[in-house]
Amino acid sequence: MADDFLFSVSILSGILCSVLAVLKFMLGKVLTSRALITDGFNSLVGGVMGFSILLSAEVFKHNAKVWYLDGSIGVLIGLTIFAYGVKLLIDMVPRVRQTRHYEMFE
Image 1: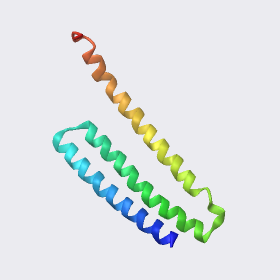
Image 2: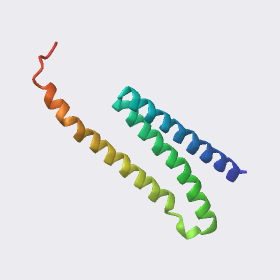
Image 3: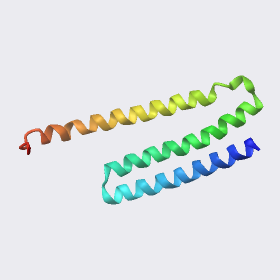
Image 4: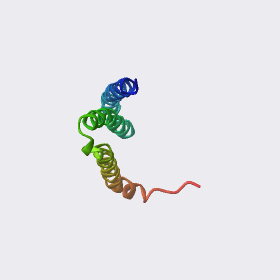
């Protein structure tokens, strides 16, 4: 029973997040919205996470010695999000420097 629930939630989450990510990427490109593209990346990571939960559960069911797979994938996903965040910050530095000379409105 729990396996069926995990299977259905993981597949549904993976598919819906992946479809949502593709739509956000497409809409972000059309609207040239950096925030929407970033949100699409976050949705894509959510889709990968949904499928990774299913993969980890299946591998653990057949080989209990690989109990660390779910945590390892979680750490890799966290590092990926961190690297993308650092990339976004680095990309924003020139924009902040350009706006530094504008008048401050208080």
